[in-house]
Image (cartoon, rainbow, N blue to C red; front, top):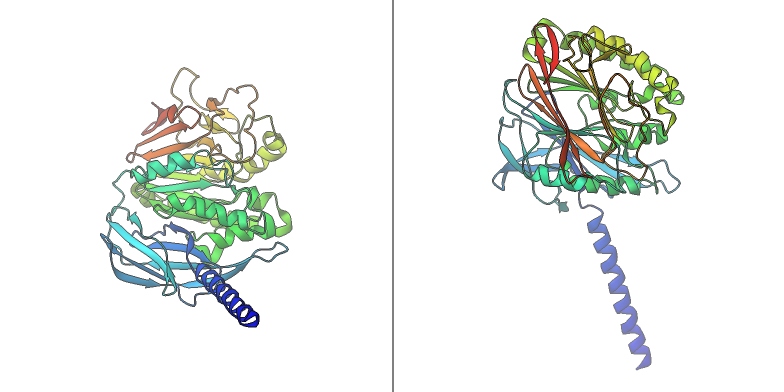
Length: 432
């Protein structure tokens, strides 16, 4: 009898172990870290997600009102983090095509072995004569993501058309053998699965030649530039995403500086042509490290750092009439008067500044992370407004001549602490 009981007990234990293994196998093909991104075609949307085992197929089913009557098939790539455990996952990419403009779609992604929950997204309207609403921020971490809760609520309310994350994610993607990166991507799924989540690299993505950043996202021109730089259009706006990091991590190849510079000039030549400007009069750039700042906590605002970025981009931006540039890196919000070569053009602090080719620079790097706020030094003559509150920036391209911006403070329960309208006139630029 004792022998029989022992045999039965062993059988039960073995059955439980098999069940655990079976459940683990199911979980490892379940989609997670789901996010979408825009292309330069409003009839397309890309869905990117991860599984921890290979599913052999990558599928998105989509349609209207929960009726998933369409299907798109893509592919997956094996991504092995550079840490000692060689943490492995499969990144799936599927492009939906033939989408109709200005409609809300329902979708889920996965494979016959496991599907994601249902999500929705809305395609962009046709043409350029509409008013995109975007939210812009940088420097959001897995720990202390102060702005994420409010952003989740506002995304659910339909306040935005796209998200711009201007570098520094998770803090850091590669930590704990990339498990911090997995956790962060699951955190932002609550916004990034519903809106195009458009990115640029920051210094915190540097590990293993930016491998986590390159692999986890799918930006326009991904196949050629691995998400490091690209441009895309939304309404009357041409948006250029750049890597400031090619100027600071030379061990990954000086050729990247040349490649990005040649691409940038060619892109701006096209975007600044009379025909292109008539269609899309606004040119906006996003990058991580700013060319101007007044922070004193770190060395980032010393001449060595700011001069590097300023020297790389300022003359080009000025020549091709870039209107607005967003940056992160400093954990605060700082808005500048239109600047070129440390000079504020045409006017005094009590009058509107006008200059048709001097960009307006805005630092918005306070969405929340495990690192401290950046501390301001004395206010400079080129500063229009500064805030050390946690928060993010709302950007509305109203029409061909007006852009509205608001800075939201998480420390003050969503209060708008800075509000400004940028206006183009035939004589230049002015502020309201």
